[in-house]
Image (tube, rainbow, N blue to C red):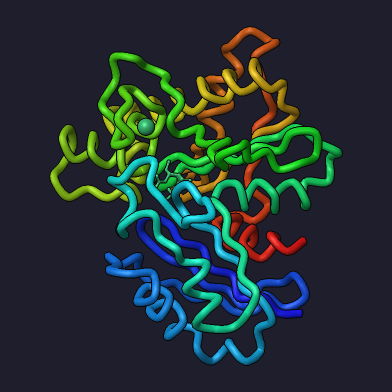
Length: 286
Ligand code: BMX
Ligand code: ZN
C-alpha cells in the first residue's frame, strides 16, 4: 500500500511518496496564495503527477484548524488561503482516492507516539516553525477535543503584556517564540534582511542574536512546564525548523532545568526530524 503524504505549512508544502511506511521520494514546493480548494489541489497534484498511479490513498497534514468544513486559520497571518478551505474534498474528487486530513502538529504527534518506543502514553509534540503548533497524546490516544482545537499550544498566553498575536490574543507563545516572531525582532534589532538561519549562525558570537533565540526557548520552556502541570506529560517531542535548529532543544532544557522539579519534563527531538508532519500525514491511516 502506497500513500501520497502532503504536509502544508505556512511557508512550504512537502510532498512524499510513502511505500510500506518508508519515505521513498520527497519534494518541496512553496505555499502559494490560493483562490479555491480545486485550484490549490491542482497545484499540489501537478507536482506529484508521476506518483499518482502508484498511490492508493492520500494523507494531508496542514497548518490550521481542520474541521469537516475544511481548513481554517487560528492565526490568519500564517495562512495563505480563504477559509474554511475544503481541500480534503477537492483532493478526493480530483484523484478518486480515499483522503484524510488533520492538523500538522496533531498528525506529527501521532507519528511520534507510534515511534517513541518508551511506553510514553501521555505526550505532546510541539513544532516551532512559521507558527508554534502542538498535538497531544493522552492515555495513548490522539486528543483532538470536540472541535479538533486541542493542542493549539501556540496560542497559550505566556505574557499577558506581550505582543499581539494574529489570533487576536496578546502574548501568545507563537507571538513570542515562532520563526516569524524571532525574525521580526531580529530584523528590528540586528539587520533589516536577516534570516533565521543567519540569526542562529550569529548567535555563536553575537549577544543580541543569542538573546533573541534564548527568549524564544524560554517561552517554549514555560509552555512545556505549563503542559506538565496541566497534563502530567511523560515527554515532549520538539520539531519544526526553529525547534530543530542548532542548540535550540538544549536551550529549552536549560530553562526547564531551572524550574522546580515537579514542573520539569523530558524534552526530546522528533524522530521524524524535519519530516515529522509529513510522516504524520501518512500515519493517519495507521
Ligand atoms: C498556528 C496554527 C496551527 C498550526 C501552527 C504551526 C494557523 C494557520 N495555524 O498556530 O494550526 O499547527 O501555527 O503551523 O492558524 P506551521 O505553519 O508553523 O507549521
Ligand atoms: Zn495567538
